Image (cartoon, rainbow, N blue to C red; front, side):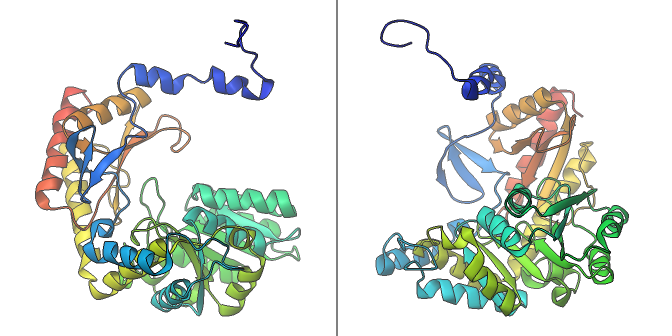
Length: 410
């Protein structure tokens, strides 16, 4: 209300905001699953709403966000450099930690050079748009992460680049899209996630590489959910297929296995050098903070020194996957081999009710609904850590079974 008591006028632009009530309805029903504050975290167990909760929804795959070595690295970096670099990498925002991480991670993934970004989302945007122009083509998996989609749209809107989307992991459809542009003079960039974040499935990278060669296209793989999870020692999807030399660019985030905030791209030195001087997401953003980069360096060092963390993560995930399948839940895909277990529920409200039952019993999972999933495919997206113990995992399985039976899901 205004001071005169008259009804506040709503501008045309904001009408949709005031009309949106879906979240309010779910909140009123007591089953709203989003924006729950974590009050304290030990990795696999957190405090939420004043009680201890087993976390089955974090992307902290190797459990390193709570590792004392990672925390100590962040503390020492703050003591030495302060809390911020106060500038972009291009000007006053580069510190020696940035250069150290770029060198280490490039060597780790088998590429000549790497470049840091302030977030993983920025890395997706900051690599694609600067590389493609008006006469070029992006051929992108329809289920690629939102950061990739945003990068595609940025390239389309800013440069007029043509975007062709192929059916999820469908190499025959990818071939059709490449056939459409094979005689066009522009460059071609195939883009795919290395592990898809919703279902945890892996694309047929060997077949995609063959098509890239056949049609003279470059290939970018977003390894956000693959780094630390698959490949030799956690080196990602290209390593998993033995095709490191055949993938042109690897994009990744710090926020999963690297226990921090930031992102990077790795590839040929000349390509990385070009991005260093042409990517607005790098040039016009404040650089990753000292603590963030120091944390990522410490996490990478631990990954290299303790490859058994990757094995423990995958064993933990498979224990829950097989337990839920045996109980009768619809797990998709049932043969996944990543850190993600997706349980298909179907109906949004039933998924929210399952979330509420699990949360009340001390388990936190993520609920994905449209547009994160196809219509009628509401699901529980579970993700696991190397630091989960069997007692945590068995509690998760047992609680799913109990609540699932109460709701008639199994």
